[in-house]
Image (tube, rainbow, N blue to C red; front, side):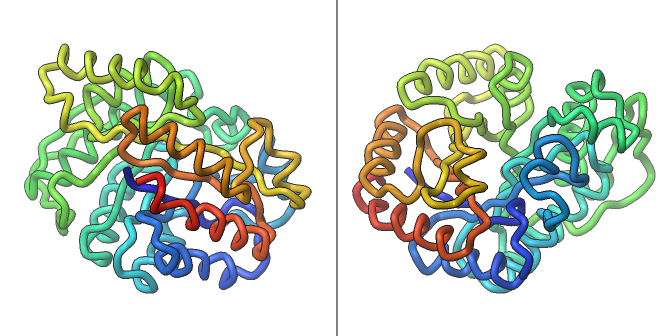
Amino acid sequence: MKVGVTVPNNWGVEDAREMLAMGPLAEQLGFDSVWVMDHLFHAGFVTERLGTKPYYHPLAVLSHLSATTSRVALGTGVLVLPYHDPIEMAKYYATLDQMSGGRVIAGVGVGSLAPEFEALGVPMAERGARTTEAIRLMQELWTAGQPTFKSKRFDVQGVGFYPLPMQSPLPLWVGGTSDAAKRRAARHGTGWLPNNTKPEDYAALADGVRALATEAGRDPSALTMAVLIQAGVRGSAAGDAAHASAIWADDAEAMRTLLGGYRDAGVDHVVVAIGSGDIPLHRNAMDAIASVLADVR
């Protein structure tokens, strides 16, 4: 089992260089991947958590980390696809995959923050359909130098699209636990990335996704089964306030038990989202998780 960790692009770290330093540190500590989150506006819970503190663009952060790391996978967990132009995102992901030597994982989802959809002029009721459309278009662009794709919003033909990603296929993991998200992962993704699914529930849910893949005529064994878990940090006011799952990233024994549970449930890749923008506390949490990696893989 692989284990990844987030860098705090979404936790209001005033000095971007301190936030960026967490990527090379994760690699040094032996993690398999580093991850970033995505919101464009301060609205709803983002405003409540950050006020006017910064929320850094996920792909800009990963672009920097592609140059300061050499081994870890670089993932978005998740990019909210309805917020973005899928052609531009396909270009960015493909470019980043080339720049990083084939280390990108495109974790994507539909989003849920109503004020942000409104500010962007994107109908929230269309988020599922737009996400599926975007996935299909991006995958066409990533696999065909002369792409052809027609939908209600797009008519791509007679043009070239380069570079293609270094990876073929570029990993695209679909986030979410709704029935629609599981169908989307099974039919169009290369993996499934639910949020906070408990170890004792995971195996049955994963079997359901694999069954949906079989129904869609796909090879279920080719799907990566992953999970993203939100973990607080003791002593961090922001982390404590946001933390409702009683999972503490800086508690090595608790993390050993939790990660071992996911391993036993057949999870391929666990991403620990550390809930703190306090850099020393974030580092302590990374150290605690890293101390149990050998025991849970």
